Length: 381
View 1 (cartoon, one colour):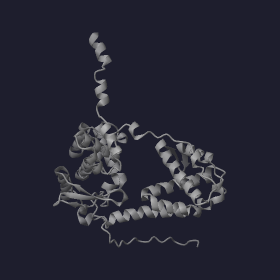
View 2 (cartoon, helix red, strand yellow):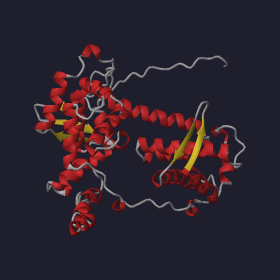
View 3 (cartoon, rainbow, N blue to C red):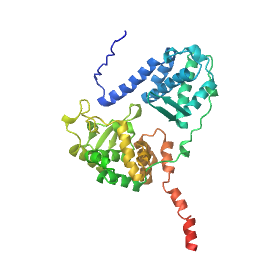
View 4 (cartoon, rainbow, N blue to C red):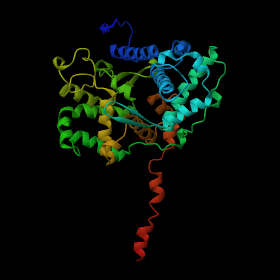
């Protein structure tokens, strides 16, 4: 009905599992986003929705559905392949007439495109890695439609290949030990911060240091750290609990450095209960507004401090994932077993961990240090 108001329902959690409430709510939030996108897509994709729900992780499911929604929007706005005005109105007959060349043109479009909004034009540039994911999303959709007998042929074999560098071909980006020390010195003393950054540092330095120490000690993933609770830590046992991908629960041992920075933060800086927003009382890392820190806020914090360690611009600072790489290379560089490091970082395949073992942080520097052509020329002069 016209003028009918949308009622936002409050989520009440009745949690009888061993998972903390915030983990359950995070999963619910992701699944809800998936369901909402599915409502926008054509109903003939129901088999595809069921396949994703039963076979991939919620975040992967969300990424695939987002890609498919974008593909459908592309069909409407950039092609003559459908007469539909809205995504949900696209028909299976129209999908059955899509050819491999049409999908290849979509992937090529995704390399560089623009979106016009009311007051701005946003330019998008995507890497081959992003294009490969979009191609994968569309491929899974067309294969599922073919399996369900909704389209006449499987066109995915004719999709253009996208070359993505093999992991072994990529440069491992990680902080060196001296850069880690510069980063930790900055968060400890406030050195090399701008005046505005220094104002925030005065209020959050113990929190920030605890975050960085956790990243470089355990190689935690961003979502693993962001979802930590005060109740995750058992200092008497010297351990804390994290929730990894695929609902895996892991117990991590505490060392003295981590114990010191966490307790220092809890006892001397973290907000009192009366200044914490309801529902966030157990969150370990809080914003100045008394809420659980967002992944974006943690990412920005890491980029700021790593940029100091790297002596580069804030924009060129490293992501939390590169601190994960820092932990891996540092652990292996200290002579630890590859298999032990694999277990700590939760790599599914040991070959992933071996990439960090093969990475010799100073190999290029060692190769060129004796090739000082200009210095030798000056010495001869």
